[in-house]
Length: 483
Image (cartoon, rainbow, N blue to C red; front, top):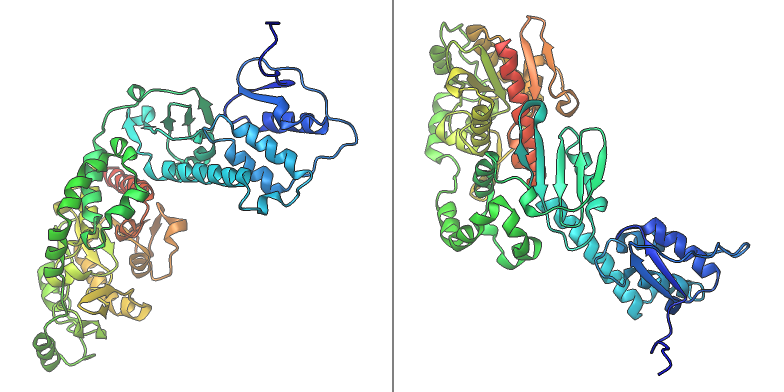
């Protein structure tokens, strides 16, 4: 034995600053490739002290496509310990094979593409399945989440959360690293353990209620659901505890849903309406002296054709002495059948948000800009259809009478149609949300979204964020009333 190693040592040992040190890899790759250092003569490591690398050879150009550089930065986030060696090998080969990445059958290319896809999928899952939990109150309020990614994606995924939750002070903890956004600056730090994350907060029970309410058993596909929400994520999702029960009861729930599906108003009911109240005849417009009297008048409203297809007028309800009035767009399917405003899915969100903001629904008055349900029939279902400007104008008389009798201190416009009716002008809710506008008669109108907007958001994380904004809006309303 001569003491010689069984295999020759690599010519260079490159030690990168961290597991996602793409800039360090890129600099080292440029130095080594322009000095004709072959892939098999390099060892790539994360951390520690490496060899001093040669300077780039003057006059030697290294040409690779921008597409490869961008994709290589993604692959750097993969957890495979051989990722840096693979990237250098591809870089080296592209010098003589400029179209290498187009050869789908090449083993290196296949591995490169698989790693890129895996990182992208992991990033997507992080966006979808991070759940923040609240700690502290007031100036100390923060939101902390625990997540266990497969790869080193935290730095890659963090800008998404900065854009989505700009106004929140939040932190995301993972085994590989942590990220904190203090509403101004994103800071990256060391890894953490699950014990460092907070336990369940008060909002999780409400989130589970929301998740159960939007679960559609008729559209359940278990394999597809588990492909999108793998079981490994369930242990960190508050709604996951509901999934087995929802799946097991899906068939029965679907049958029940179909059985109670709303149908069109009875034909004989419409015939009676048409015989007694011919379309477009003048409505009774004598001034009423109470909300009850006004409600009785509105039950025979024929100011626009919407009355002929709806089951009944859905008038406002609440305290006759209410100083706070909420105005929505129009009744929905359940409101039309029950004859009461805000009793459907959007109404459930509205009630929950009122309670969370500290407002009693019985102390306020709730109504709509349009008092009849406008819809399009689809089989046995009735699909909401937005009222037009003429229908809003025709129904404004009733809303004006309600406000005359109530004399509120503040009105809340829930959505663009309500704002248009109250202000008699188009309003861009997304731009003017949270503003209070005074009318010519001195009444103040606070602008926010309609709760049905939250129901239309398919991304649970985005829906939760929008709901939190809606709660904040209603808390602002409460503070305005208190002030």
